[in-house]
Amino acid sequence: MRVNRKKLPRHVAIIMDGNGRWARNRALPRAEGHIAGIESVRDVVTATREFAIPYLTLYAFSKENWTRPKEEVEALLALLAVYLQRELPLMMKEDIRFRPIGDIGDLPLDLQEHLNGVSRETEKNKSMLLNIALSYSGREEILRATRLIAEDLSRGSITDLDEGVFSRYLYTAGMPDPDLLIRTSGEMRLSNFLLWQLAYTEIYVTDTLWPDFRREAYERALSDYGGRKRRFGSLKEA
Picture (cartoon, rainbow, N blue to C red):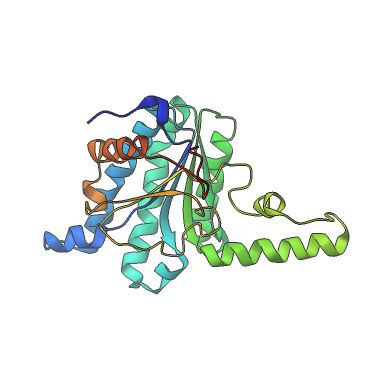
């Protein structure tokens, strides 16, 4: 397997799915799957930086995930705090900027402070932007953008609306849309993730569960992307 470095995506988005199944297959508590998944995050972030891919967006916790058992939610959020503390030195060393996206106000205050602290610490890093989607809903993001646009239209702050203007009101403002979406665990759905941004994104689904999705599996996805012809709805190859 060989990754074509001349045909790499600029923005990779990943739905990290399968932690629970990974744990169940080993007769372990679900939290153990999330712990194992942290190592896959590190592998993918490190590889993304090495390939000089400037944007990576990871779907870590959806609005719908709040309905999961309280113990699992608390364990997952606690792991996130541990991850941030452990990985901050790597982000600084590798010039990676960190940004949480989603309804961050839903999260516990101490975690909000931690997220904001890491964002401030890394805000001058420029080589790569790592987005973590937390308490995120694609539909809610579109509704939020619509409300903000309506307010600015009524104030006269904007006078026209097109796709470019709309995109400036999304969490991903200023970023290119994802070129490649990876979904692990074999599920064939978007799960309310980046619904506006994924309009022309190439989709790669693998049966590999997220805790087993390490560098080799990631390179396989990048290699597959490099062999595709993107047309964006036209007959001309992009």
